[in-house]
Length: 309
Length: 270
Image (cartoon, rainbow over all chains, first blue to last red; front, side, top):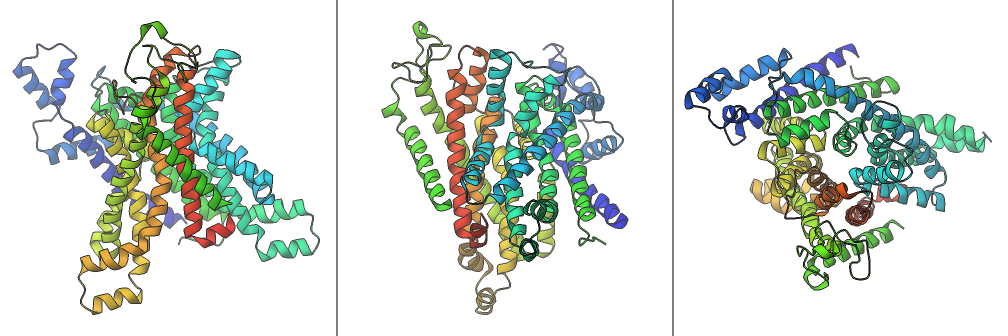
């Protein structure tokens, strides 16, 4: 297991190098001279000498492979460069913003699992009844609704009309209620569908028939036997939802004015702040890869039949 | 049951497409015509979906905006599936180093959550509808490529391919005439299920101000601009949102049904 973990960590390196190349290309291929973008904020009167000097300072006068090598070397040491707007180091800014996004993602994930799994179990147990049909139609609606729209509608209802929750910002747990429900919506539906299908697989197995014919209590058959075996694919799905929830959080942060990584990225894109965009993308790729690795390892830990080494 | 749902989905989507294609005939007003006398009016007989801050008729705007939104769902799927098919087929068929390199390239694209990759691409190319659609297309490429590659890997070993190779058929002939028809059903399922993702993501990018730029409008952009008039002008948020939902629901119903129809194992289970 340890060897497998180490191997997977090593395999992450080329992928992350690929991401750095992608991120570097963002900088390199973007039309316009970054030096002019930086100087543009200070007024239009920059002399050609000043632009040339800054190009030299930023290393833009070097060939692309040198620029890329420099970029990777610095990124590996935690230096993601300085933002064009505000001229601040990018990484500390990301580290301030990321906890907001992470908290929103984790609360949403918990919420999605706590609601989605029981709904899926109920739908499977009541297969082909009206309960199953209603739940599955709701699940389909859940994956079809734009999350930002649900966010706006919730805000309209609970913050502006009934005034029971704060409309935006951070600070208290109440601030996280609407954003988490919004982000979790699609995942609740997805997890419910996955749980249902995984449970149906198990309910058809011989051991369930045996348990039932022995007269084991139905509740015990479902929860103790079937659900336990259905849990592995379900938990993997839950883990892999982390990525889509992280993506969902990015959009929903804008709806609820949460100062997270998503808003940082969108502000950076609108302000053509390339180092900030690069930093955010690189950071998310790192976190996403680590989480997916953790899910894979968790898979092995949960299922004694799976051994990677 | 599932097949019925698929027919419902296809019918709903067809109705939506017809509504937007026939917008010039159906829309009661010019979608861009401003009328300051009827600013921010709630739904009425004269303005079914109310009016916006410039007194423009929201119903007409939803119909015309739907042209952009639905195209933004279909075009990226067309581009993404074409690119993904070429990558997946060649990788699976040629194998070896070529396969290795392409798969590592896809790993890089998959190292980011979809919307984040889309944001990175739009960040590079700049905001705009075309760039947003391109971004969504790129995001969907790994999904297609993997499905297609998997299919090709298993088909490659089958007798009819060996027979074609033995009879001296060229690689391109085998790929186009023997392999492609056999991966078509898997490809169609993947494509139909990703139209919904494409509609949602481009609407999301437009909502964030990174997709469609005014004066052009789509449902996402309408949702973004209507937001500032909440809570009073609720109709500006309700109707475009319902249309996005209806379109995505329609393609998801259809995609689910198609998948079950083409994969009997799943249809027994569902």
